[in-house]
Image 1: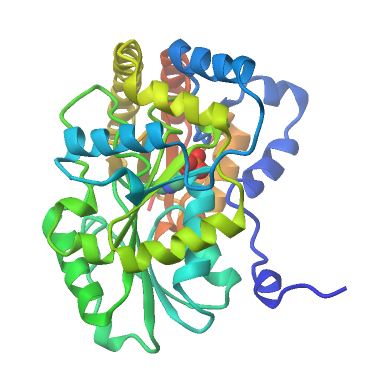
Image 2: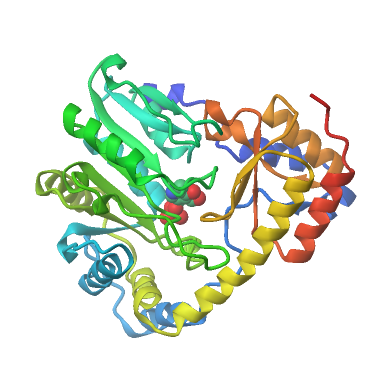
Amino acid sequence: MRINKGFQAWDHPYLFQAMEQAYSALDADQKCRVINLGIGDPDLPTPAPIRDAIAREHKSRYHGYPTSQGRLDLREALANHYAERFGVNADPDQFYIGPGAKTDLFDLNAVFAESGDSVIILDPAYPVYRDAAGYRQQRIHFLRGTFENYYQPEFDPDAIEGKIALIYLCYPNNPTGVTAERSYIRTMIDTALRFQCLIVMDIAYADFVPGNHPSSAFSIFELPGGEDVGIEVGSFSKPFSMTGDRLSWVLIKNPAVRKYWHRYRSNRDSGASNYDQAGGLAALTDPAVKPIVQSNFEIYGRRANILTNGLKMLGFPMTGLLNTPYAWFKTPFPNSVDAARTILSETGIILTPGSGFGPSGEGFLRATIFQPESRLVQAIDRLQKFNFPTK
Ligand SMILES: Cc1ncc(COP(=O)(O)O)c(C=O)c1O
C-alpha cells in the first residue's frame, strides 16, 4: 500500500476529535448534563420556504446530473445579491456553485498553488486552509493574530522564502468573530498584485448577523484591485441553517483565473445537487425567507448578549459574537486543550480549544450560540462556579 506523503504528514486529528474523545470518557450521568457550546451547526431550523423548495424540486424533476458551474437562475440570484448587499457588479458567469465552502476552500489550493510554494494563512482561522496546504506539501506562513493587532496581522512579503502562491483570509472570522478594516484588505491586495499571487477570501459569515445590527462585513470585490487577485468563497450554511445541504459559491472576476477554476470544476465533480440549489434560490429570492432569517437573528442576538455579558463578568478578554456565532476568549489556562478537557469534566460544558485554529489560538477557547437561552444561562452559571486557575 502506498500513502500520499502529504497526507501522511497530515497526522493531527481534526479539530473536534480531541473533544469527542474527552466526551466519550464521561460517565452516563455526566453525559446527560453536558451543554455543547462547541458545535458550529445552527440549531434553528432551515426556513420552511427553503425546505419546501427543496422538496418540490425533488418531487417534480428527473434526477439528472446538475451542471458543474451551477444553475443559471441561482447564479443570477447571487449576482443580484452582490449588487444589493455589496454594491458589486458581478456577472452570473463569474459564479461557481459549489458543494460547500469547505470543499471549495480545500480545492482552490489544488489549482492555484504547487507543492513547495508558500501559502500565507490567517491565524487563527478555519483549519481547512492549513490542511489544504499541508496536504500538498507547501510552506505555511501563519499571519499571527492577536488582540493587539486586532486579528489583522501585517506581514513582510519580502521576507518570505519561495514563491507566494496564495493568501487565505477569512473575515468575519471563525473563530475570532473579527471583521477586517477595508484598509487592511487593501494592503493585502497591493501585496498580491506586487507578488502576482491570489487572495482566497472566505466570507462564509458575511450574512450571519446575530441581533440584525448593521453588518460591517464586505466583499473583496468592493476594493480596488480585488477583481484582479480575489477569489471569494461564500456559503449558504450559516445564515440559512443549510449546513446539511452543502451549498456554496466561488466568485472569480479575473477571466485568466476563472479559466482554471472552470476547468477544475468541470473535471473534479458533477456540481452541487439540483435540490440544494433550488433551496439556495429560495433562500435568496423567496420574500418569505427574509423575515424568518431576521427572526432567527433576533434569537441569536439575545443568546449572543447572554454569552457576551457572562464572559465579561468572568473577566475574560474576548472578541466575537457580532458577525459570527462565536465567542473567542482567553482563560488563565495556558494550554487550550487542557482547558477544554478540564472544563468539560468539571462543568459539563463543551468548548472548542483555540489551538485547533492555529498556533495563535493557543490559550483561547471558542464558544458558540447554538443552544437555547436557558442552556446558555446555565452554562454561564456553571462557569462562574468553576475555579479557574489564577495567573
Ligand atoms: C470560516 C468558515 N468557512 C467555511 C466553512 C464551511 O462552510 P460550508 O458549510 O459551506 O462547507 C465554515 C464552517 O464552519 C467556516 O467556519
